[in-house]
Length: 331
Image 1 (cartoon, rainbow, N blue to C red):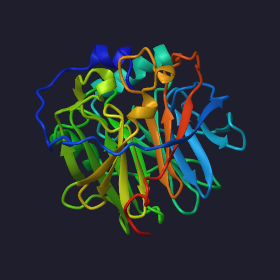
Image 2: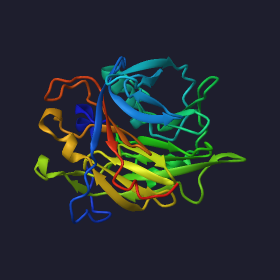
Image 3: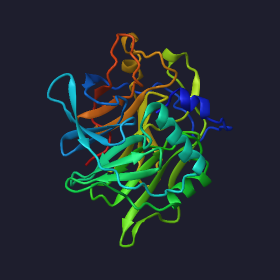
């Protein structure tokens, strides 16, 4: 997530455009429904996953809670599952970044800073910790365990200019149906996609853990006066053999290849998100969570406890219809 502390601690770096911005307006997604979410202890909805038809969410302020969402009414209810967190492994993050995460938690809670959740076909949940750059597996039955991810993930990411700044580490996670490969989204300055696979000797990368690295700025939608802001990823979702990335700053969802993270196409949700009654008096975009499925896209809003123009203070999930003709890939 982004907030005043991130803005205070962020160190600016030179940026250059990694790929051209779209030259024409993107197709706009149609909003089907909007749902406020009750009973998230720490608010701050920061990830979504659909596990065999059930939606789960996390909060970056709650280190020991995973939420199942009751979606049977217009206003959703979150039911908390208590997590017993085992000792946190060393991912290779510097003592400085770890110290900043711990210091921030004293002010706002959430040292682990869970920023994304995904699941495999068996229903196991995977939560990515931005504060410690690692992934917690919450099985259907049994105690949670941290994945024994290679330190090469963080090492490769930092060598490529990613994972350099506090509160700009891993912001999203996607897991293969078999649970034997995961993709991680590095948030910003630089942003990128990384991956690791589970083999007979445990989790490992091939020659490099990196699929893609990007830097530079995005131009904000016209409703926001077309200002520029650093490119970011705020979540990723795996659907029909493609990665879908939530690009918070630009108010869009983009389809990318699993193999290289190459951009294929994008859709905007700016028209609906930036209606006057839905505006927040906050500096950054707040779309933090994404699930893409047959019905469309579910986008979660982490409002940092702030009220929007119509007075709504609870976390929000939007359900957008799939584009006409579907997402453009066949199952």
